[in-house]
Length: 202
Image (cartoon, rainbow, N blue to C red):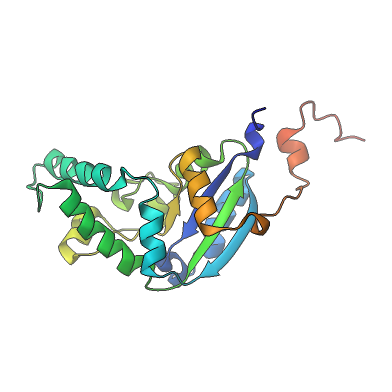
């Protein structure tokens, strides 16, 4: 039997720059206001091994990321720094390791209807420069791929959010033990998910 959509879960990590800039409360409030439920959270300082495991959960990540990066350069009329997708991703991964180990990370699991898609919408596009106004990255970051490439670092975009339900499941299993995820009821769920809203006046 398939789970009800309201039980969908997604993984979110507030990256070191989000914590350093004091945006934890603001970011969490965006998810709470839309009706998602926080079911797990912990602050940790990650090592490079954890970062590599996280980004390579998908065995195709290295190839896909390299190809997308090359395509991004070409779409802007620029020459990619390298033509081998795997060589480009190797550089990206090293920069991600430096970024993600530079300070504490706040790892979270959020639950609710269409959690993966809703969180991705709230977070905004990966590149802050072109993220929509109203999204977390669009409202709070002025970084860009052009600037991060010039500086030889990862783009600072505050948050990681799972890209699909399958990816979310793998990431949650990597970052959390089953017993760390709490099953509880929020009063607001009566409004969000009650079929007839027939309990309001009782």
